[in-house]
Image 1: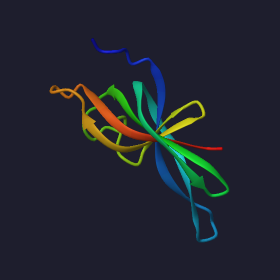
Image 2 (image 1 turned 120 degrees about the horizontal axis):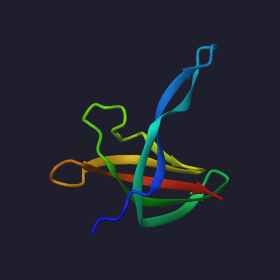
Image 3 (image 1 turned 60 degrees about the vertical axis):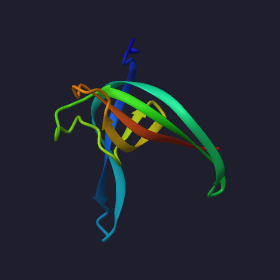
Image 4 (image 1 turned 90 degrees about the vertical axis):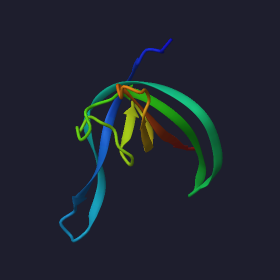
Length: 111
């Protein structure tokens, strides 16, 4: 039996914003809300710049949008759930009919 897609996830895409002085900064633009299921798989911890950094790999299952649709997740985009951020590394169809996608993602936290 399939578990329900009960987690409210905001799909975000990176965008470069010019700063007016010849440089730019990275900003994240919300593309919409998808409901998903998050399953944690493995974690690691190591030193980060000035703190400890931990990373958890996750599989996130969502309904598939049409190919090319802005609501269809892609690598390098991310999901946001409140203060939690899941960076998408890869996306694959989760079922033979292409109704669902599995997003392989990493959640990183610093302490």
